[in-house]
Length: 363
Image 1 (tube, rainbow, N blue to C red):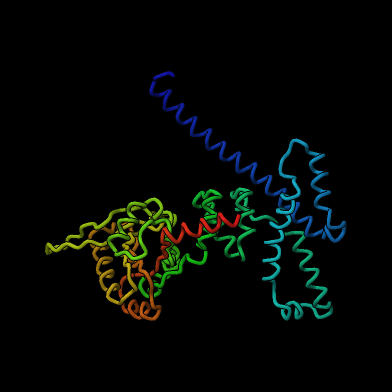
Image 2: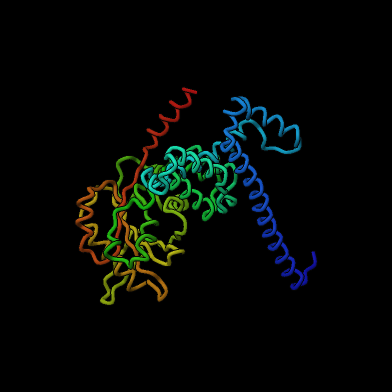
């Protein structure tokens, strides 16, 4: 290899540009394939193919497409069924959110309501276009989504996560199994009273409840120190569970007051997209109001000692074993700093192993 520095730099730039072109080409190919799958699913629904040509029409269609395109994959009977299911999932979700019957009826009383509804549904089946963002999600991920999601909101939540976080299909399966959609934003907070309106929803979205700490191999009976050490030992898994955008800053970081006193919050993170510190206190017991006062002080200290000019307000989070919602809400009501309270779930290793053995014996 030529050792000239200019050549080395040029070669490095060429490699990077080629990788970018490969990525763009992959997206383009994926887009074209998915648009075809979408249109095929739409045709099956709009034409009411199975009612029109019989229950074996999809098998027939699979055989005919394979014969026409023998070198192409993707035309199996199973995959064509997934194309129909893919389109049907969004079509049915959308049609179920159409205007109420009363509103449709009032727009044109000369045409029967039932007839108008049928026409509206048929027109939608004929014309519904694939959303652009679907092109950035691999086909296998789409199959997982339509097989496991129950609503448009849930499906689009995971689609955004896949795109923004570059999730593998395995990661997507794990997050759906762990019900991330239901847990996201589930922490009890006082953000309505402590953050500007434009930041409230964003800050809420970076917290969840409960956190799934099933990856920790610690005993069911444990204290805060054991929990903290286990999480630090599994910091990569912990960051994944916290969610996209978190960076670990430190454990038991020294916060020194102007008068010389020092304090040590359990964990400090930085959320890069939102440009804010997040102070986490771990409690292996049920939540009590005193936790809020201590965390409020830590958040104030981080704002005073660490927060930069371009940073947004620091957020505090207590992760504890269990909560009483009223106790949490009352304890946060008059707190001046943005705080949240969440719980965690922890499986004992023995219990998990027993379930795995039981599952294997049933296969």
